[in-house]
Image (cartoon, rainbow, N blue to C red; front, top):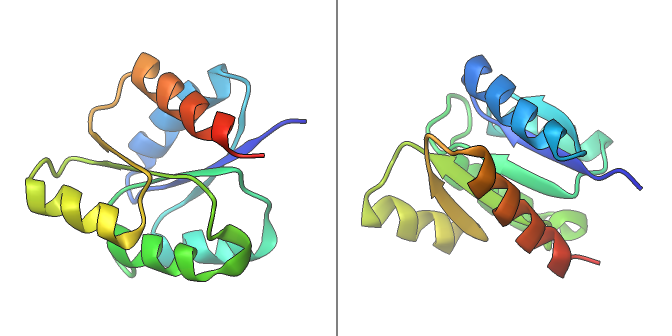
Length: 124
């Protein structure tokens, strides 16, 4: 069964880069330009894991992660935050919002592969 990963990032370039890495591992991808679009995508698609940026228009990554955690059917969906923000406060806020892992961009293929496999192994 093919698993699907949702990439939520306002940068089309980052969406494409992350999608290429994820698809090379055999996963399918969906993309959203901000947290609100990400939530809308979750209402119509089955998603096994989410990679989300923090700095986005309309709904930022912190609010997006909190909203996902409030959706009963996605409360346990693994979320990787991938952001250029490397400060301790940003990382703390992301984890408090409900992120499972935090990566600082740019993210390389080996790191993303290891983190996705780690999180999806735990998920039934």
